[in-house]
Image (cartoon, rainbow over all chains, first blue to last red; front, side, top):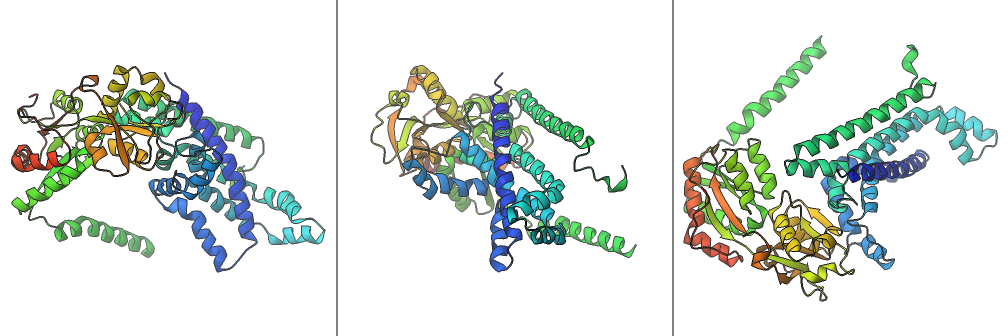
Length: 226
Length: 265
């Protein structure tokens, strides 16, 4: 029994989630300090991977990173090829998960009372300190939700991954790809097994979160029911 | 209360729109034949389909292309297909075993050759043995369990003693045209496709032809399905596929035809 899809999927999803967290949060924080039409336009671009079908996203990434694409040619100078490699799975997962993190982080940051931030500034805190010590803790439940969404999206990414990373057993064959080809090959047992693994991962994640929130951490504001 | 009624009316309206309107607007006066065909047949069947429609103006030929395994799966799950035209006997055998093929309707239509291709700009590859070279980093193959071309490729590689080395650098595609695209775009250093696919593209060059005895005979059978909604139309189309007009088209695209078209019925 080849368990490589499990390790590949976990490695890809976790790496992509970390990248998405950093990029999504940075983009959201940056956007919060901007207004105007140009910023709204950037919003549209950032949300594109969510609106477009994954196959289209994969196609664009292929055009970009392929042997004849601008980024692909650049990387070839350094002897690196992205297409049909494991890093491609991380890149596609990050691109599709980014809008989710970006949106939720922005929503979370939006609902902070700006007076708290102003107060910190008047007391002499740097912008970075204001963000790290005032804004982030206030927005934490939303940001955490965004991170979980990103992980889930990265784990389930299929269409774009197949286009850019391809199906290379042992290197880029993620769980969703394994399930797809198992179904195509009428290997129903293999397909069901991998579906089960996916469900198990979700349950482990949820149980972990439940245990963590029970210790008084965010996501249990409960609206006064606790 | 009013808002609920309003919402309910809206839902009814939308539902009525989607139920009654499309079929009345697009009422069919023509009869249809739905053909699920292996994607390597695309160029030929597009032309043959047009020819047939010109000869029979009251018929629309719907062509559904894909990997033969995928098409087989769709038929097993009840897709409304009249004719199945596969790139290998395996998928047709499976359907026959499951009792989904109209008995006596199966015919062998064309044959094909398996070739090794490389991007047109490549000049270094000389034959199948070169696939083991370290310079060849990515080899594109069809996924063997669903794509006939992938299965034939695997058989050939095994026959030539190259399977273990090539497997390590193989990217598996969901149909043979995807293999072609991978090589055309240069994302794969080499690939194994049918001769007809290679000849349909100017962006690849044929490096070598697989020896005939290195894989199962490549036979493309076609048959009418038991669940066909238009069996008589399907029979006429199948007869056309076996006739001289279609044969000319197939030969033009690089397929091989046989005198004996009797299928495994």
